[in-house]
Image 1 (cartoon, rainbow, N blue to C red):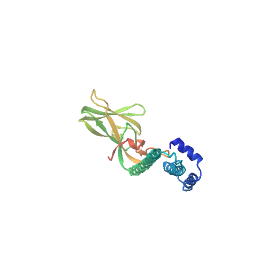
Image 2: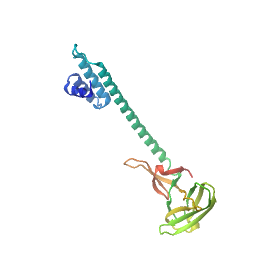
Image 3: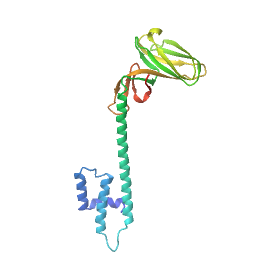
Image 4: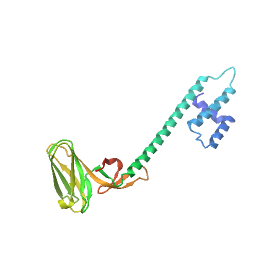
Length: 227
């Protein structure tokens, strides 16, 4: 029995097929699911075998092939359902783990920050190569720059602290860039801040963390946990 024959027989056959369809609807099962279609197919197959022409019996190979196709579809549906459940579980675990970050210090790959009157801004420079000089250029929203020398360093992380009182910086928005020795590309900058709030978007997606001095950023942009 081909799929076209099965569909035609489903539309024209009453009795057992109608009873099966009614049972499916009464139990609240999706009539279009692979399991429901397989049950209906078996009922129709039995009805057709019982009413076959003894002189021209049906070929059982087609039935076996059709049942195998239903089994494959049902396995695919089960796999899809398991994957969806796993995704929901992972999302819930991510939300729970993100909520535990409130009050903790994290590091984010960024170069813009809000500086207060007293609270310093800390972070680190990721040096890929050793440099004979490492300088921070701290630029305010009006384009005025202040240089903070960090000295010579080997390859690796270089910690820094931007103290507004020591450098005479006023509260406001700033951008930080790094100067290294000639011939080297500007390294990456990580800025630190305490997580003040975690927000879950109503339309889905990754949780957003509100970090002091850095604003609201996606959870996946955090590169390090802990000071």
